[in-house]
Amino acid sequence: MPAVKKLLHTRMRVNDLERTVKFYQDALGLTVSRRHTSPRGAQLAFLATPGSDEEIEICQMPPGAPPVQVQPDLMHLAFAVDDLEKFAAELTKKGFALSDGPTVTGSGSTIAFIDAPEGYEVELIERTK
Picture (tube, rainbow, N blue to C red):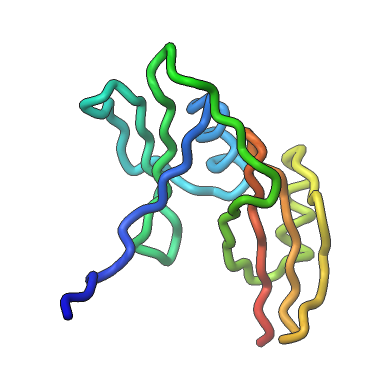
């Protein structure tokens, strides 16, 4: 049976592309790898994630499309951090606050969440060493 080779990107639809891209750049240090307009007229920005080949595709549909309404706890992105306490302190300096945690999990890792624009959540994970 054929199998896929690897995950390339995950798409997230948003109402405000620039606000969302700025959040991921400022809060998490992601970088825009490319931008373009899709054949259907959507504005796309691809964010590079350090240490990963997978990208995050941020998509804003053209004017007239129904607005995005993210359901609570529908999905989230999770990122590894070396030191959650230090990372959270840097977020606070930048004007971002944790929305939940830090919490120690059953495996001994520590997790916390930060709210991204549009109602999406971002999980931060400091894995047990």
